[in-house]
Image (cartoon, rainbow, N blue to C red):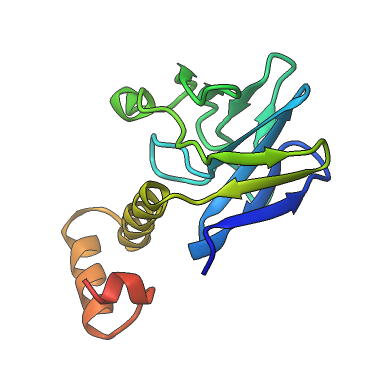
Length: 157
């Protein structure tokens, strides 16, 4: 499977799914394009909420729909926490997806091995969190794994 893919831009921001089921948010900022893994590092939630696109202001800042943490759209660097609690995680910023080519309408992106590794880690975190916190959540998570439930990449570890 090729790790590059091409998307026709029809707005900004735009949510797409790349190879290895990697969720990507694409931003068109002036004549440039930036792409990031669709993940807020605070709680490892998608940047959008209820299928509403993440907000981008006129300065090119992108906002997490869950905590209103803001990131620079050009660099992915953390700017302000909003109501997020994990400042140390936010300081990592957004994970960049390399732009291979942009011709004004179509953008070609590359999903690197580092991005795939990061996405696998985030999927495991999201799967674990779906069972709740504490001992009960941990037990539910282990029972689901033993029952063979969950994404294959999680069960094979």
